[in-house]
Length: 148
Image (cartoon, rainbow, N blue to C red; front, side, top):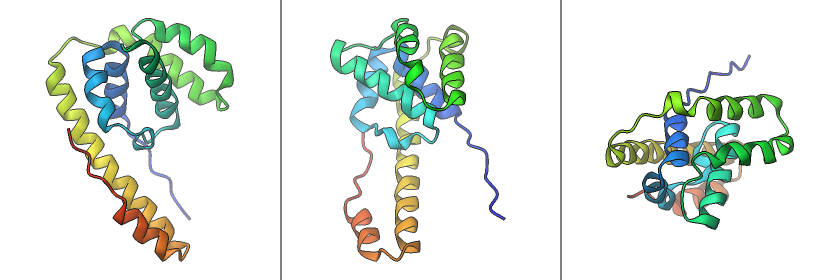
Protein backbone atom coordinates (compact mmCIF):
# COMPACT_ATOMS: atom_id res chain seq x y z
CA UNK A 1 0.00 0.00 0.00
CA UNK A 2 1.25 3.47 -0.92
CA UNK A 3 1.89 5.53 2.17
CA UNK A 4 1.70 9.27 1.80
CA UNK A 5 4.40 11.19 3.62
CA UNK A 6 3.57 14.48 5.28
CA UNK A 7 4.55 17.67 3.48
CA UNK A 8 6.74 19.93 5.58
CA UNK A 9 6.37 23.45 4.33
CA UNK A 10 8.23 25.57 6.85
CA UNK A 11 10.47 26.92 4.06
CA UNK A 12 7.45 27.65 1.90
CA UNK A 13 5.71 29.40 4.74
CA UNK A 14 8.74 31.64 5.35
CA UNK A 15 8.98 32.43 1.65
CA UNK A 16 5.28 33.32 1.44
CA UNK A 17 5.37 35.48 4.56
CA UNK A 18 8.36 37.42 3.26
CA UNK A 19 6.75 37.75 -0.18
CA UNK A 20 3.72 39.30 1.53
CA UNK A 21 5.54 41.75 3.81
CA UNK A 22 8.77 42.67 2.00
CA UNK A 23 8.92 44.24 -1.44
CA UNK A 24 12.72 43.86 -1.39
CA UNK A 25 12.41 40.11 -0.76
CA UNK A 26 9.65 39.74 -3.36
CA UNK A 27 11.69 41.56 -6.04
CA UNK A 28 14.65 39.32 -5.30
CA UNK A 29 12.76 36.03 -5.34
CA UNK A 30 10.53 36.57 -8.38
CA UNK A 31 13.24 36.01 -11.03
CA UNK A 32 13.87 32.47 -9.73
CA UNK A 33 10.40 31.50 -8.51
CA UNK A 34 8.08 29.13 -10.33
CA UNK A 35 4.73 28.40 -8.76
CA UNK A 36 5.19 24.64 -9.18
CA UNK A 37 8.21 24.73 -6.85
CA UNK A 38 5.77 25.01 -3.95
CA UNK A 39 4.76 21.59 -2.63
CA UNK A 40 1.40 22.53 -1.17
CA UNK A 41 -1.61 23.62 -3.16
CA UNK A 42 -2.40 26.42 -0.74
CA UNK A 43 1.13 27.80 -1.11
CA UNK A 44 0.73 27.84 -4.90
CA UNK A 45 -2.61 29.65 -4.61
CA UNK A 46 -1.26 32.29 -2.23
CA UNK A 47 1.94 32.79 -4.24
CA UNK A 48 -0.14 33.35 -7.37
CA UNK A 49 -2.16 36.06 -5.62
CA UNK A 50 0.99 37.77 -4.35
CA UNK A 51 2.59 37.73 -7.81
CA UNK A 52 -0.58 39.07 -9.45
CA UNK A 53 -0.63 41.91 -6.93
CA UNK A 54 3.05 42.65 -7.48
CA UNK A 55 2.69 42.67 -11.27
CA UNK A 56 0.00 45.33 -10.95
CA UNK A 57 1.32 47.52 -8.12
CA UNK A 58 5.09 46.78 -8.12
CA UNK A 59 5.21 46.14 -4.37
CA UNK A 60 4.36 43.40 -1.89
CA UNK A 61 0.72 43.31 -0.76
CA UNK A 62 1.40 43.66 2.98
CA UNK A 63 -1.96 44.10 4.80
CA UNK A 64 -3.87 44.15 1.50
CA UNK A 65 -3.42 40.37 1.43
CA UNK A 66 -6.38 40.15 3.83
CA UNK A 67 -8.63 41.90 1.30
CA UNK A 68 -7.31 39.73 -1.51
CA UNK A 69 -8.09 36.63 0.56
CA UNK A 70 -11.63 37.74 1.37
CA UNK A 71 -12.27 38.58 -2.29
CA UNK A 72 -10.89 35.29 -3.63
CA UNK A 73 -11.54 32.70 -0.93
CA UNK A 74 -14.86 31.58 -2.42
CA UNK A 75 -13.06 30.55 -5.60
CA UNK A 76 -10.84 28.11 -3.68
CA UNK A 77 -12.14 24.61 -4.34
CA UNK A 78 -10.67 22.88 -1.30
CA UNK A 79 -11.95 24.12 2.05
CA UNK A 80 -8.74 23.01 3.79
CA UNK A 81 -6.68 25.17 1.44
CA UNK A 82 -8.87 28.18 2.26
CA UNK A 83 -8.46 27.51 6.00
CA UNK A 84 -4.68 27.19 5.70
CA UNK A 85 -4.39 30.42 3.72
CA UNK A 86 -6.67 32.21 6.20
CA UNK A 87 -4.63 30.92 9.13
CA UNK A 88 -1.32 32.00 7.63
CA UNK A 89 -2.69 35.47 6.89
CA UNK A 90 -4.28 35.80 10.34
CA UNK A 91 -0.98 34.92 12.02
CA UNK A 92 1.28 37.06 9.84
CA UNK A 93 2.22 39.48 12.58
CA UNK A 94 3.12 36.60 14.91
CA UNK A 95 5.15 34.79 12.24
CA UNK A 96 7.08 37.71 10.73
CA UNK A 97 10.10 39.18 12.38
CA UNK A 98 12.24 41.80 10.75
CA UNK A 99 15.54 40.20 9.89
CA UNK A 100 18.25 40.33 7.28
CA UNK A 101 16.39 40.25 3.94
CA UNK A 102 19.52 39.28 2.01
CA UNK A 103 20.04 36.25 4.24
CA UNK A 104 16.38 35.24 3.92
CA UNK A 105 16.61 35.62 0.17
CA UNK A 106 19.74 33.44 0.02
CA UNK A 107 18.10 30.68 2.08
CA UNK A 108 14.91 30.91 0.00
CA UNK A 109 16.88 30.59 -3.23
CA UNK A 110 18.71 27.54 -1.87
CA UNK A 111 15.34 25.97 -1.07
CA UNK A 112 14.05 26.77 -4.57
CA UNK A 113 17.17 25.20 -6.12
CA UNK A 114 16.42 22.01 -4.22
CA UNK A 115 12.74 22.10 -5.15
CA UNK A 116 13.62 22.71 -8.79
CA UNK A 117 15.66 19.52 -8.85
CA UNK A 118 12.97 17.56 -6.98
CA UNK A 119 10.34 18.67 -9.49
CA UNK A 120 12.63 17.68 -12.37
CA UNK A 121 13.20 14.21 -10.88
CA UNK A 122 9.45 13.75 -10.29
CA UNK A 123 8.64 14.75 -13.88
CA UNK A 124 11.33 12.49 -15.33
CA UNK A 125 10.26 9.52 -13.21
CA UNK A 126 6.59 10.03 -14.09
CA UNK A 127 7.43 10.04 -17.79
CA UNK A 128 9.68 6.99 -17.48
CA UNK A 129 6.96 5.08 -15.62
CA UNK A 130 4.43 5.95 -18.32
CA UNK A 131 7.01 4.84 -20.91
CA UNK A 132 7.22 8.33 -22.40
CA UNK A 133 11.00 8.33 -22.71
CA UNK A 134 11.16 11.19 -25.19
CA UNK A 135 9.29 13.44 -22.78
CA UNK A 136 11.60 12.35 -19.95
CA UNK A 137 14.60 13.31 -22.05
CA UNK A 138 13.00 16.63 -22.93
CA UNK A 139 12.46 17.34 -19.22
CA UNK A 140 16.19 16.98 -18.72
CA UNK A 141 17.30 19.00 -21.73
CA UNK A 142 14.88 21.85 -20.95
CA UNK A 143 15.95 22.08 -17.32
CA UNK A 144 17.25 25.49 -16.27
CA UNK A 145 19.29 25.98 -13.13
CA UNK A 146 17.93 28.26 -10.46
CA UNK A 147 20.43 31.08 -10.12
CA UNK A 148 20.27 34.29 -8.19
